Image 1 (cartoon, rainbow, N blue to C red):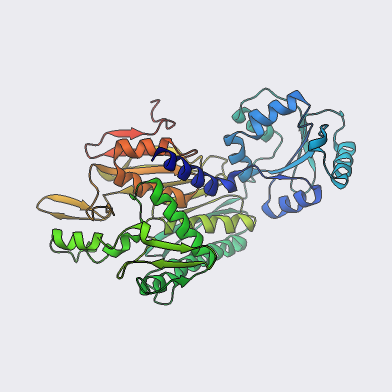
Image 2: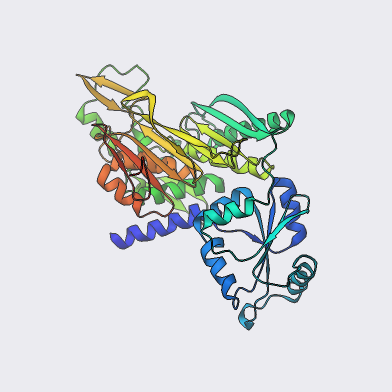
Length: 460
C-alpha cells in the first residue's frame, strides 16, 4: 500500500507540477516576443552549466528552487545562453552561434555567470553576477532593476453566476477596454468548461457518460478524458475519500431546503453500492469512458470549479494579463501581484462565525481552496449534517469544520480540500505532508487549528 501511494503521489506531482518546471527559452527573438505579449521583463543568464562552479551553485540554489521557479513563471521570461564544455552537453552549431552573438553584444565583462535584465521592449535595465543569496533575496535583487507597476494600472472586477456558483473575476490592467475584454474571455472559458462537465446539461459529454452507465463506453474529448483520469488518480491517493462517482448519491442528500428528514440507512447503503472510482473504466486508445454499474453517475462538484479557475487563469496569462484573481466561491487562483505591488491575500473564514476570519494569509502558491460545513448543511434533532459526503459510507463527514488547501493548481487544491475533510485530521495532514508544494489548515469541530508541516500561523 505504501509503494502504491508513493507511485500515485509521484504521478500527481508530475501532472500538476509539469507546468511549474522552469521554462528556459534559448532564442532571444522568441523571448522578446513572449515578453511583449505577456508584458514581462526578460532575465538573460550566461552560464557554463557543466564547468563553472558559481554557475552550478546559482542554478542549484536559485534557478532550480521551488520559490524562484514559481515566482519567475508569473513575473519573468527566462532566457539561457549556455556554454558547456563537456562533449555530452554540446549544443547544436546554430545554438552556439546564437549564444556567441548574445555574449558579444551583452556580456560586456566576458564573465559567467552573468545576468542581464531587459524590459519587454528589449531595453537593458541592468546587469548582475553571482550572488550568494537565498531565492527570496535574489528575487528582490533582480526586482531592483525592474520598474514597479505603473500607478495607472488598477483592478477591474466582475461578478457572475456560473456552474451554479458565484465567480468573482479580477484582472489588473491600465486600459479599461482591454480589461473588459479580458473579463469576457475568462467568463467565456468558464462557460465552456461548464458545458463540458455539467451533468445537468443533457447534451454534455458527462451526461452521455451517465446515460450509458452499465450499457456502453462513451467516446469523449481529450480534455474531459484527462480530467477524469486525474480525478481517479486523486481517488487512489486519498483511498476513495475523493470520488467523482459520488454523484450517484445526488438524490439522497439535498441541501437546498427541500430535505425534510434523514434518508434511511437502507437508502444510503443502496446508493453507496453505485459509488466507486474502480468502476470507472478508461480506454486510453479509444479515449472512452465506461461506468460499469447501471445507475452509476459521475459529477465534478468537488473539482470542477477549481479546474475552471485554472483554465481561465491560463487563458488570461496567454493573452498578456500580468496579474489577477479568479475566485470561484472560495476556490481561488491568483497570479502576479496587486497594483500596489503587494501579494494577493486570502482571509481564512472562521467556521464558528463565517462573518469573521481567523487568519489573513498571502497566496504564494497560486491557488487556495476552502471546504467547510458552514455554507451548506441540514439540521435534524439538533445535529448538523454537512454537504461534504464521505463517498465510502454515504454519510456526511464529521469531526472537521473547515479545511483550507494551498497548492499551485486550484483543481488539485479543490479535490484535496474535499478529501482531507473526509479523511479526518491525522490521516488528512499525513497525506498532505507527502505531496510536494501542497499545504493545509484544518479547523476541527472544537475550533482547534491544525496545519501541515510547512504552514506558519502566528509564529507557530
